[in-house]
Structures are given as C-alpha cells and as structure tokens.
Amino acid sequence: SIGSYGAYLADGSEYSGEYGLSVGDLKEFHRERMLLLLSANPDLLACETIPCVTEVKALLELLAEPAVASTGAEAWISVSLKDSQHLCSGE
Image (tube, rainbow, N blue to C red; front, top):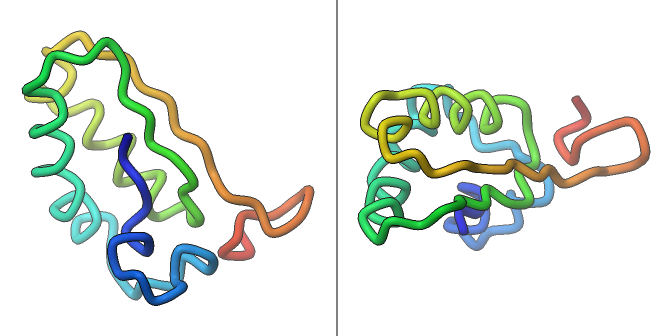
C-alpha cells in the first residue's frame, strides 16, 4: 500500500496534511515508490489514509500517467477525516 507523505516524515503531519508541498512535489515523492510496487505486478494499489486534497490530486495524476496506467493495476484512495465533513487538513 501507499501511505501518506506525512507517514514517511513521522512527525505527525499525516494527521494534518500540512506538508507545504505542491502537487508536483508529492508526485515526485510517490512516483518511485509506486513504480517499485507496480514492478511486482499487483492487481490493486491501495493509497491509504491521505489527509489532504493536494496529495489526493498528486496520486490521481500519477495513476493516470502512462507508466502507471499501462500496468492495468486498479487503485483505490482512502482519506483521513477530521470530522464527518472535512479531511484532516480541514478541506
């Protein structure tokens, strides 16, 4: 599975989504890990506990890139919620 950038940082930012990074920055972070996982030919990628819209956008864009889309693997994205109407980031 692919976790949030904040989980990699291990500084608690996975609960806020406040990374200060752009969609492009997050795509660069996730690309290598995603391609490595896809090299094992999974049927499904789980992108889990994503706390902010910026990271969701980055993952969606990566999933649409030819190097990823051509593998035929399906994916899901789950998000982390602050309450019933907001992501952890407040969005």
